[in-house]
Image (tube, rainbow, N blue to C red; front, top):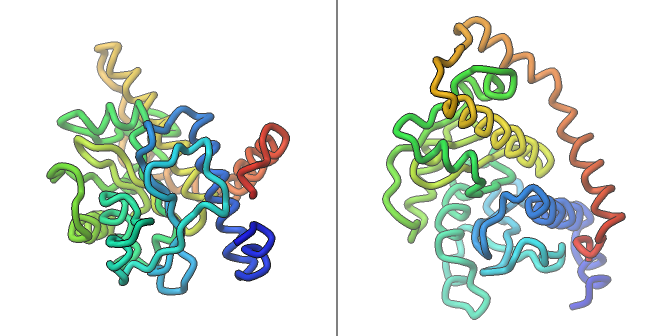
Length: 252
């Protein structure tokens, strides 16, 4: 099926989700958050979240186009026996969460350098030591039950329980996962999570005592971020505009 046919044969809303998710893959390469041909992004297209788009198995993020994304059903495990089967661990994590958490519309799972380094510590908590780290104060789920590479959706269901009503999981010994209502918001969460983790790791590297905000100040700062929610959309749109100038092939 040609790109033109795909655009006209499917709902315009789905096509826009495809374009936005494809942009997120390309931007992740620019940010140097990607890792070989692994890691996965997904976005729900159905009201219940169980029908979702995800990158195909073992495709480098720099090559992914809107038309490349697979349309999957979290309740249909038969896809795993098809020639175009997605990556097993991706199906386990994304399929499990989309099947269990309707509000987690967009899932970004990565192993970015600083956040993964923080996830490797015995205490991977983001301490509120500046505005960016305080953004996640009492809003970051921490998972310390890593049990190897995910092999079935039970792991995704377990991570769904860890996520609860939060939007971000620090996955101990593994990486990070951001879940948000839109691609733009999930990307913004990942952006600030990696920035916050970088600050945390650099602060730890000094060997000096951390200047941790008291609860009241940290919570005030975290709530303050909520007033800047629309900046995620502005940031993502401007990043896409830069992509359009450099390489608009992600829209194909």
